[in-house]
Image (tube, rainbow, N blue to C red; front, side, top):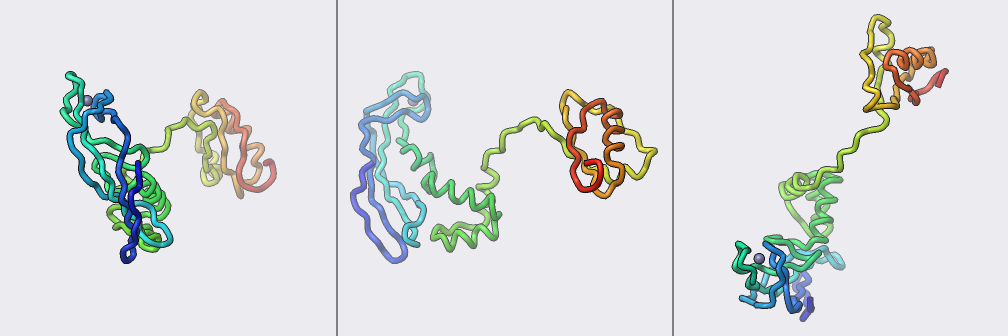
Length: 204
Ligand SMILES: [Zn+2]
């Protein structure tokens, strides 16, 4: 990408740039093409600089796809890390806004983005939260169970613990006396190792 001009206007910094790679990979089939169909300008909002919003006017090209098996006749080139299909923000700004949304939510996050010179609405931040990838699912190795209320009722019995899934169990026994005895009781009842007792008191 080549930057041709940077100018300031009001509270914004404008960057005029263009792509200059000789080829681009089709976004449908991945086949590389050198045949340019047309060019056009798109505007991208970027992270602020010196407290001023940054707008990039980027000249991009549309290429012909040369693969007969591809459903696309033409495709728009993308700049990795900067542009996405139909995206109006750079990847960097999108990541910053998503981090703000996840940390603060919609209303407080929107107020902060105004101070960061990249103001977006509360609903935009909520959409970013919904679009965020779920964290990887991992089977827990230690499970915490709060039994401090149950333990005062000796009539309560426990089913066998699924030891294959949770070989170690953390039991919250704060404020309950005789914790060591209780631990042995649950080890026998569940048939597994109760290896961690949380809370304070004897028998920890
Ligand atoms: Zn293609």
